[in-house]
Length: 278
Image (cartoon, rainbow, N blue to C red; front, side, top):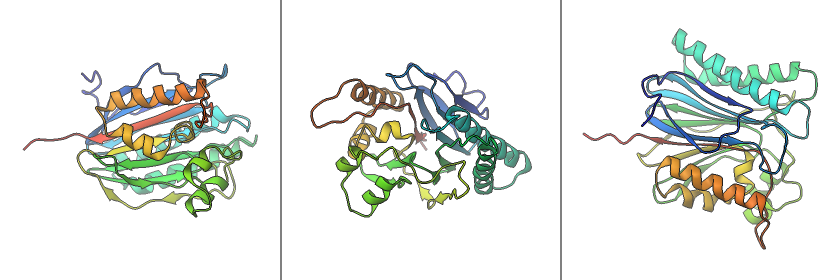
């Protein structure tokens, strides 16, 4: 049962949190399974942040931000980013203005606020805008978004804003080489940069059993797209979240031949439309 189903319009922010297992909550016309935790090999704080932010009963946004560990204030930057999106989406909901504009305004506000810290902080940002039965993606950095069909077909993958991501997109290297590349930690586009740019995807209609994944690179650096897609086509959302967490943390903790685990904070949200009858 969903203990919060009676209050579907309540935003949920997870900043510096460590969940033991996934949580399931309503958002728009679907359900979202969310998991976030710091690197299992680290003693510090979880620098990822994420949020489920409703716009109305049929629409909302999923947000994942990965504060850059190599820069100061990573956890503060990610919290600022998701809080900025919450503020602009909630304001748009009250004013009745469009959700797309609210998301773009929130990203710009996040960039201004993180830059204003004046300490060189930065964070990635990945957003899925859910409007009835459609989804549109927005992202800055190497946190990514996938859409996986019922049979495991990858319908959409956003491109990582990084030298390795660009090389993969252009075909210069393969996915396995990209996952094991020595410079896969470098990111070329961040919230907090004066040159920050927003990549906006097309509006895509979701089929009833499509799964939308919004995640930090803790997921994508430890599982291939085909592995994630194969996991998403099996079972219910909470079971999928548990499988993803178990596989990724297993690889972070145990290096095996041919499989390189990259220890990192891990945050992801898996979303599906509810299936209605009649």
